[in-house]
Length: 140
Image (cartoon, rainbow, N blue to C red; front, side, top):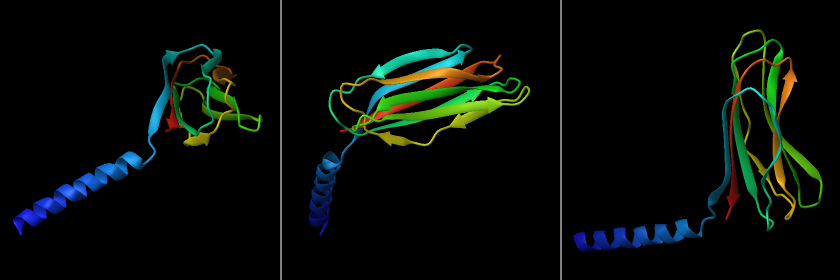
């Protein structure tokens, strides 16, 4: 009985390992982390895909506060049809408040050979610092 149980555990473990290897995995393509920045980021290329594929991005942004101002991160790409598409995260505050913004996970499929870019722009009257972190992953 004990030998049978051990054999079943070994077989089950091997079966799970085989299935786990067949499941598509997400691979990190790019991580951007900006801490305590107080200036805009011009349009910057993140990567240029060489093959069609599925990607996902998630972002988090925070600021310490300003009068009627904030920051916005915008990521741009051309999808497989050539249409320009965008993803963004932003934080806006009132007088002296702290704020944070977290964007949903967004899946996208950029056109091969066209760059995926991002920039950070000011919104309103800005005199504050911001933090930005985002990750792009590709399904393999």
